[in-house]
Amino acid sequence: MKGYLVLSTGDIFEGDWFGSVDDCTGEVVFNTGMTGYQEVLSDPSYAGQIITFTYPLIGNYGINERDYESIKPACKALLVGDLCRQPSHYESGHTLAEIAEKYGIGGLSGIDTRAITHIVRTHGEVYGLLTTDKEKLASFTPQPVTNVVPGVSVKNIEEYGKEAKGPHIVLIDYGYKKSILQSLLDGGCRVTVVPYNITYNQVISIDPDGVFLSNGPGNPKEITPQLGELKKIIESYPTMGICLGHQLISLVYGCDTERLPYGHRGSNHPVKDLRTGKVYLTSQNHGYVVKGDSLANAALELTFINVNDKSVEGVRHKTLPISSVQFHPEAHAGPQDTGYLFTEFIQQCQVTGEKSYA
Image 1 (cartoon, one colour):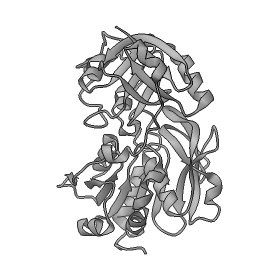
Image 2 (cartoon, helix red, strand yellow):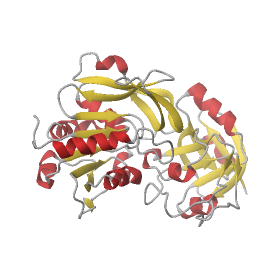
Image 3 (tube, rainbow, N blue to C red):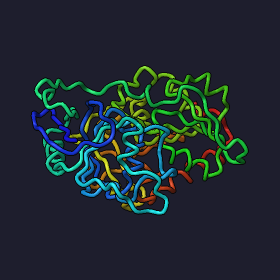
């Protein structure tokens, strides 16, 4: 069956439809990873987005039961050049097309993903409609994707690793990846996952040893109503943030965020640790970034920068045990070069006896 993609730029692409047969709209983004399509499609940070895979062959090792990053994928659609319908891998249980259909995700294959990527790089914010009805192409009205965090955050408190002997960590869920939870569990932590709008008093009642702010989708400024409570929370415990969590920590301390021209999404983005001078390859997935010049008078200092565009990749508080990074040290998919950041955070929670730093 033929399907069509119309972009907010007016460009139209025709391809072979797979997955859900329902029309869908969303922001069009691209991911440069050669592998990891299962982790990408199930990453909650892609909520409301149509993902273009720049690597030409997708689906060749199938889908397994182990590498999902969430219970249910949150992305809207997938755009691939060559879709493999007969994967080969000993853990493969389903094809990519089967999983797309199961979870209501649309998809087009056999289209020019290089051209789509070029359009996104040129225009930045691009929206698209996928449909099998050619008559709908002329009437497409782009709608920005907003307020997506409530849809991917847990609704109730969840507990993991109850028998663990390590520190007790509250993981504030803005759309967390399973690999973040697993990294904390592998470090011996007991983890309590809480909704994005958790209050200071609720966290106090849980009595953790540390707080972790997860990744998540959308514009960080949409979480502004929670910043007051968040400030009280992170100033009471050792805290680490990743991606959206990093941006929220920066907003708490008066920094500003902005939209990148076309985002960083892939598994090979180099970042430099300003403390050691070392460069690491990292997994990244974000469309917004902390503005570097807004750190000038803030209580935060720069710790990591992106080697390619010099954008902010990490900060830490000048006096409190609060730090964050824009990239994903848990990787999956991607290099685990910066996994040591989890170890540093867990050790900080272990050695800090005080429960309040305010």
